[in-house]
Image (cartoon, rainbow, N blue to C red; front, side):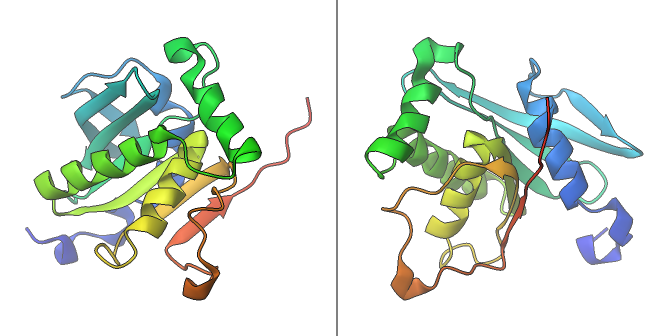
Length: 180
């Protein structure tokens, strides 16, 4: 069955990507884990944990549409010796990418090679920043790649190239205003 023959509601959508990046990516997931979101089922097909840079991500497959997405984990202060805090700090203090950004890109390239139908990346907080980074960086080689984020951090200045334009219709950022 081709993707075009699947009902639109059965495809990966923004709401599913937000749920995956805001909740499920933080759970202990193993390849073959099944995640249910409403009536859709997703299978975890790969998990990456790079202790040296702090990158944590999963690749999931929508079991009905056969689409794939990479979901990047956001900031976790206690994880991997505080590497996420160093990544966050580098955005503010140096305006350049932390090595976690390069790892996020390399992971996407590897997964895209293995799963050509990988057309989505997502994340929240630092994970959203990583998601937007790989979408911007792959604009020419993966023009179909869509990034969906929840409360992303700011992209590092070394990623933004005003000559290429700041707008990117492949990126959707959802922002919340939580009062505690």
